[in-house]
Length: 238
Image 1 (cartoon, rainbow, N blue to C red):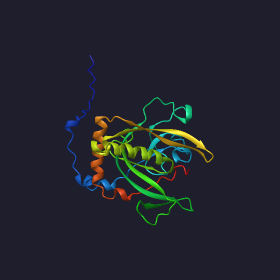
Image 2 (image 1 turned 90 degrees about the vertical axis):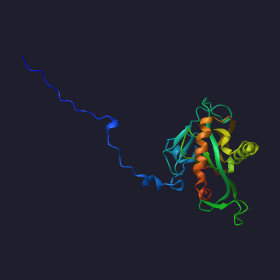
Image 3 (image 1 turned 90 degrees about the horizontal axis):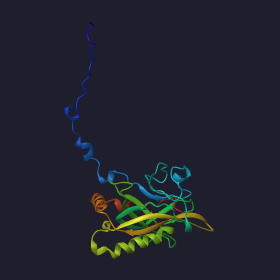
Image 4 (image 1 turned 60 degrees about the vertical axis):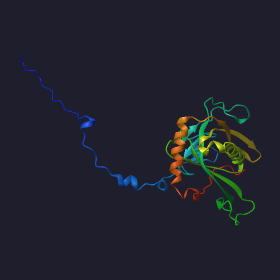
């Protein structure tokens, strides 16, 4: 009778048996709210880098880390176009809450760039556009950090809608208690085609309000937040 062949077994330690890692709290303690980058909320335009590289489609709503970022996180896809340039997408739009907002001014210079001014700056030329610089909570795109969203020119009407709804609900408490749903619409005129934001006031959910509250607390410890005035240069110049 031949002896049974013994199989060598390797014991795999349970996770609970692994030694504790040496904590390095100093790494996280050194990273404050002003040491992290905030992504930007965008609507895909013909000149947007993600649209040009086909990593997003014209009319999509997405976030990017910079104006040259071609690796977007798409939060709402436009879908097939229906009547009047609206989307046939049956999915709900991108839900967001406003954490903070400040106004600025911007004017295009002769080199195609932008010159930025504080809203009350007396040096701003008369032709300067008002910019509405929002910090929004959009949990579908980021449930930890707020996004920057700048509205001006063609976006001014939607900014006024947002501001009106916020003002009417001021007695309820912080702005982030109000929820909005964002989609886009394709329009065109003699200057070309472009996408404009479409807004709907919706009921907030308890989960989203909780996330927005945490973001508001995070921004409260960032004293430089309103100094980061930036305008997206891929917005339509119409």
